Length: 438
Image (cartoon, rainbow, N blue to C red; front, side):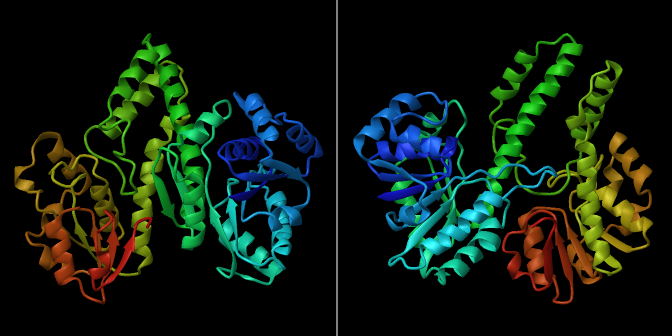
């Protein structure tokens, strides 16, 4: 394939070398003449393990050329990988000056080109940038429309400095955000041979995945370091602790808990977080990330409350009261906190939870409910149908097939459903369904 690469920093230079190694003809484009001269002479513009030998080899193969001429690079290629920098501006926003300028040039470059061209944006971009900012520029400058003369897509890169060649050859996965099959087909041809899963998604999701992955990496590093600071203060070996944490591949190092949903609660997580923070405080250890987890959880609860209040409706039915489906544990249940707020704001409330029978609650579970909503018994109903029929807004906090079937049968067109559990087939409900964050 004939490929042009714009921006010859880490991502661009490594991609150029690896694609040429794999037999493609690659044109490297950059505004920095020094980088071009280095590549032309078989030298690497970036310090990276394996790049000295690889660049020397591909430069001698005749598969690599370099230029500052955007027009020529686009005319002589069928796919362009855009890897220009998007650094932070002083206020923390993304500085898109370079990529916006390039988009104008790319649009002008395909104005007179026959045949379709695929633009693959690989620079880290704020979600919506490709479709709302860059695509319109290319369309205006070229006089063409996406799908008729060119395609745009977004493919996040997951190359770590220092191991980027190895990461190129063995990525965790390949993610391509695209609006059409032709661009997906080109990228499958380029990267489909790699030993990983190939995922096609929306452009916006692909843009967001890059941020989400980097933020998760930062979160994990910070969590391990905060844990280490507390371990040091407690005379505990932090490496032993984190090694053991990583041995759990059922909950810790797994997809568990990594799906959007409602707030956490129950008898373990909130109290153990508080105890951790108290331990840290008594030993003068600062844990700002862990210290804000409960606050963030509370904001999630308030987000749900605000959605119900914004509806302007006064009769609310809650499907679920316990902190988790399949249990009667009400301790620190976020649904109990919601019920408490609704009552305090004067809303008419009814509750259905098939697992919660107040007469059987014991110990701390009973004390918690008596403290927060002592008269909840008068609001509980034995059947879901009566709660649905007497409510204008339904808050669904239980994830169970009988619940979903009852909602499908009984929800009316005039009702609003706040979905806290990602109801499957929610389009089958007759009322207006709004997710918490989806």
